Amino acid sequence: MSARTYEVRTYGCQMNVHDSERLSGLLEDAGYVAADSGAVADVVVFNTCAVRENADNKLYGNLGHLAPAKTSNPDMQIAVGGCLAQKDRGEIVRRAPWVDVVFGTHNIGSLPALLDRARHNQRAEVEILESLEVFPSTLPARRDSAHSGWVSISVGCNNTCTFCIVPSLRGTERDRRPGDILAEVEALVAEGVLEVTLLGQNVNSYGVEFGDRFAFGKLLRACGEIDGLERVRFTSPHPKDFTDDVIAAMAETPNVCHQLHMPLQSGSDKVLKDMRRSYRTARYLSIIEKVREAMPDAAITTDIIVGFPGETEEDFQGTLDVVRQSRFASAFTFQYSKRPGTPAATMAGQVPKKVVQERYERLIDLQEEISWDLNKELVGRTVEVVVAAGEGRKDADTHRMSGRARDNRLVHFAPTGATESIRPGDVVETTITYAAPHHLVADGDVVSHRRTRAGDHHEAGIRPKTTGVGLGLPAFGVPAPLPEATGCVTT
Image (cartoon, rainbow, N blue to C red; front, side, top):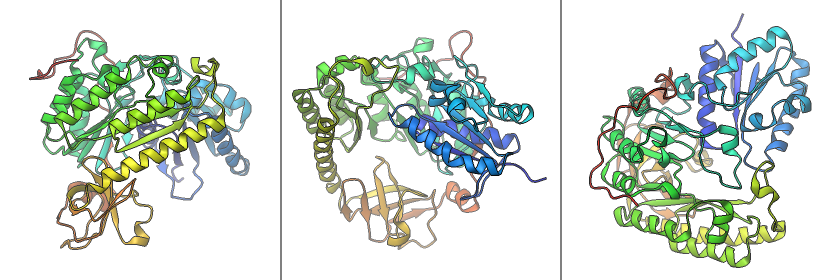
């Protein structure tokens, strides 16, 4: 009897992407195999997001598309997990009775058992826990990339932003022990991974659970001591917790990339107060200034919400002003989306859709102009690129390859001039010949090419698979301290 196949479909943030790696690892440990591309899997798992207004419609639409396949193959199983599952719970089975399993953000490790139980009992199994029992990083993971990996340092969030539903779905912040994090990073590097991204809802509040407000800066410095780790990134920080010791750690640790994603959300102090963001524009701009003083080459990106309830034209002009001053390399811009269960959903002054759209288009135009100007400054410069698969949608037509520079800019390059074939996971140096708002192009010969174990693994079809690191959530006592940071002044 052949093994049952699976497919995991992911929606939402980086945390969901990493959770999907865990789900894949769990299923493979349970004997499932990944379905071939284009094939209908025996088990389809939806790992959902609840942040956007149309998340519900997207899920139920996709579930509807699978209903005929389920009817023709009753042995097929459909599972729904993630934030929307945590929110809607039994409503999912009521609206889509062909769903077999519903599980929440706190019990992704239960998926194989829930699938077995649903198959045995021939009924839907809904299991939603209210708090985390096992840290996700103790679970196995089938990594998507041979050269880069996500590493969770915390889960949950202690902030109370009025537009955000995440804290109610993922719970309060829980921090991993530093030794467990570093052990997972070392395990990935041993598998050939060149780059890690430290992941949390608010990475620079890391350490709050064990009383060390400098823990994140120390963690960055500790990553700098790991042989073979070439790039370290992190996402996402919160301006209210961003301290000078983190800036110093970024500037002084060679493998920490000079790239910072710093959510702004609004350039209006009134709107920031209504959002309950607990910082103001002056504080935000002072962080940007300090980062650029320490790292003039830093690429800074952001998140911005347009049309938050009560936002006036004057408030929106404040956002445009901060964007002009900050000169972001790029911005993730969103039209405000009302989410039931959040305080903002019932606030007065909901901005008409037409007004939000017009402001959104003005913001996009301004940011694209800034991004293009900054990218043009890189023409003629030689950059280091880690080659990736799937980053360039037109690579086959243009005969280029693609990857990310150290500052995370997307680079499409001509793979000519190398003495050996270039593979995803390899490292090249190439000179920028053209700039666009969202990417760079290098059409000359590569300056250098370094073959890597990650490239060997990609070529062989090998992906890192970690078995789960550490003993789970902190239990008793304070973890062993990381090395002391030096030369740091907190804000």
